[in-house]
Amino acid sequence: MTANQKTRARLNTWSLHLVLVVVGAVMAVPLLYAVLSGFKSTDELSRNPIGLPESWVASNYTQILGSGDFWRLIGNSTLIAIGTTVLIVAVSALSAFSFARFAFRGREALFTLFTMGLMFPFAVAALPLFLLLRSLDLLDNPLGVILPQAAFGLPMTIIILRGFFRQIPGELEEAATLDGCSSFGFFWRVLLPMARPALGTVSVLAVVTSWNNFFLPLLVFTDAQWWTLPIGVQQFQGQYSADYAKVFAYLVLAMVPALAFYSVAERQLVGGLTAGATKG
Amino acid sequence: MTSTFLPDKRTGPGAGSPPPAADRPTGRARRRTLHWLTAAGFQLPALVLFLGLVLLPMLFALYAAFFRWGGFGMPSDYIGGENFTRLFQDDVFLGDLWRCLVLVVLSLAIQLPFALAMAVLLNQRMRGRAVYRMLFFAPYVLSEAITGILFGMIFAPDDGFADQVLGKIGLEGLGGQWFADPSTVMATVFLVMTWKYFGFHMMLYLAGLQAVPRELTEAALIDGASAWQRFRNVTLPLLAPTLRISVFLAVIGSIQLFDLVWVTTAGGPDHHSETMAVTMFQYGFKRYQVGYASAISVVMFGISLVFALAYQRFVLRRDLEGATTTMRGDGK
Image 1 (cartoon, each protein chain N blue to C red):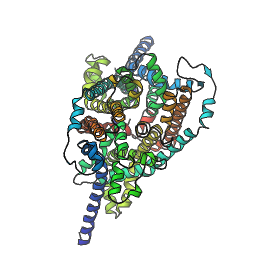
Image 2 (image 1 turned 90 degrees about the horizontal axis):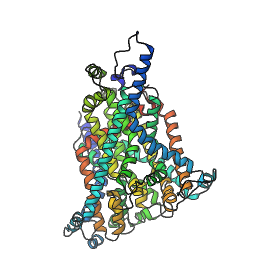
Image 3 (image 1 turned 45 degrees about the vertical axis):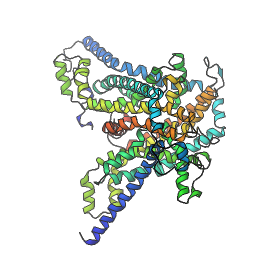
Image 4 (image 1 turned 180 degrees about the horizontal axis):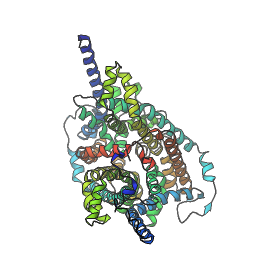
């Protein structure tokens, strides 16, 4: 390498890092700003919006953590996320198994129907769904969120799981059948344990989607008793709109569970999204 | 990915042992029925959920769109296509269509190329790569409601963070009303969308780039191709299937945008950031014009469907294998 080439390479590396640092800062600053603002008083926030807190006031955070309301939101969100995930995974696994391992009449038509579900905007169904839930007496009931979330999550989950199930060799199934395994026995005792990574992936996707859902809980829950985190945050912001620092603290605390979950389940999440988006 | 798949006729239970030729037809028919029933049994729970809570509501929206109806009891006041003709004379709804188009164009022209550039940068071996990747993707896992409220406060007029920073560095002129000014509100919404979603597209591209064989770019390098030529002629074509999926998701996402707008502006000021979904919500849940709101739903669905079908027909079919089998059933 000539000296000239070397300086050029170094220059390239430098500009590359410069770009990434700038973009990284743009991504991180809103989050950092929220965290720092949560440690200020609203009074200080208007005097000193940008710098570090003059004295770190933790009371905004501790007040929220000390209130039962916040924990109830977390509890509701968790309950709904778990309910949705269990339902989605159970139902999709059965369906994907049938799609992957059975040749039956109408299979392709049915599969196409499910895949078309990918492009059904939730907003389109929102109104009649609301009316349906109302007539089933499922408003202000966690099932009113869990069931529709599961239904709308099916297409993606079925597509991903079918892809995984098809990769499990047919010889295994033959062996199991010869050993007297019913098809459900094969599904339950052989296929599911083998597909554990795939089940993990779709579960993580389902948890994140459910956790972040806003529209459906907004329609279904009028009773504050059942609010989930995103609804609770919105209500809190409306209620304390003058108390900026407090709202920032609330936002930060509301972000923590999602970010913590992400840092633990990053692999599954990214794997699921890319699998869901790029293969069937 | 189809290499490990078995041909269909061998995938059922009892695969590998086709019925002996001596089998009586009745036995075979009975077995086939049993086979079908088993398969159907596995499908039943999914089918019930999907038909009941996705398809049925959609069809009902289609039905209700032809009535003047406040949402109580069953619709009875049939008015034919009146909701639709009213829709296409409604300035707010025409504005929704226009704003949807603006978002689509901005996404395709700015957000996705930016995501691609970041993916290409982060595809290189370098220090801190994993950290950047985590950081760029992190907003995707935050709920739209939380993101929206955060940026609503950052872009608050005058005393928000954005204006304060611009003031500190002597650029007050650049700041302003952000979400509050009709002329800047869509740009601000788009900015937040990009912050939240570019990482998702970047991740897709990174996954796609993993699949580009290193030998190909190395061969091009040896042939004396410049970095741009290598990107343009080797990487980009191989990444095309991923790009097509990402474009599809970006467009569908723009058509359906709701949460982010609802928590930041609720469509304001004076409808200038309203999307179809927000207008639908306003009419359906605030003003109880449920028939009219259903018509909006139907048009939204129609646009999504037409786009999806056309896209599948003219764009996606070029992908030979793997990338889009979701849309075509079997990878055939």
